[in-house]
Image (cartoon, rainbow, N blue to C red; front, side, top):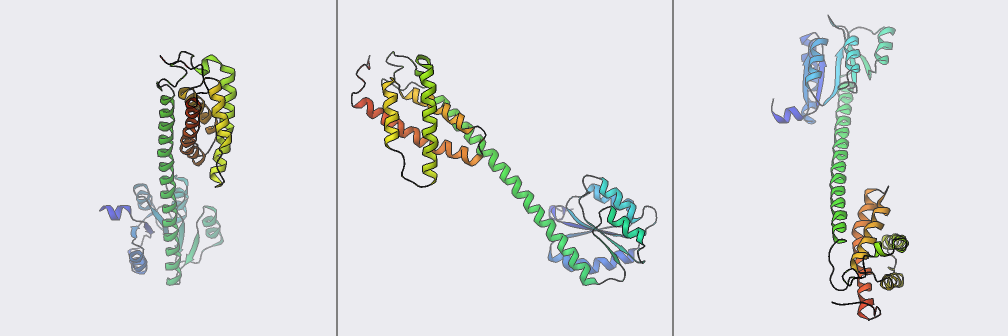
Length: 294
């Protein structure tokens, strides 16, 4: 079996009489060709069960009720108990007027319909086409779900990598402007309570910044300058700001969806750069006179 046939949608016809299989094959062939589907045949319930075990993508089973050995009703009951085939729709076809018992049993096991011969050929073709198109729609939906899961998985990997890079940035040597380099010490170690307070303020400021960006309003300016100046007053350098930023992003990311986390990481980078620029301006203006250069 070539790959195209292996991957195509299939209809399984089950009847113990070869002439009935031939008649259904000729009837359904136009719709099979139009929808690029494959017609499978079985001459007994046992053969049908084997086909179902070995085959994927079966959209519909057309099955005779009265067959020697395992009849259609019993075969359908077994089909519905198997996880792989439980959701495949079944249409029963019978040459005899169905009894109330047959009608009840077919409905009880989940058969879609019971058709009595002679039947309207166009009606059977229409019903078959409906199930083929429904199966195609379900396949497309499952494909989209898998693609979305893969995209989300890749995004999470990218975000985790970005957060890891930010953590590494927070441990880098940022040169003579850093309070750590001037011998004052890391902000989080020097004043842990103040560090926590500043982190909370930064988190709220970042959150407000994101809301403003997403609603296309004018960005914050005075608030960012004020926060940067307060950092400068605490002798904070770039490393201290990155410590605060990483902590705030971690806190804001908890329990958020992928879209929100993406916004936090992308817009957060721009935000921290803006705060950093204002912190640098603070030092350039000579407002931190205690700063030591060695």
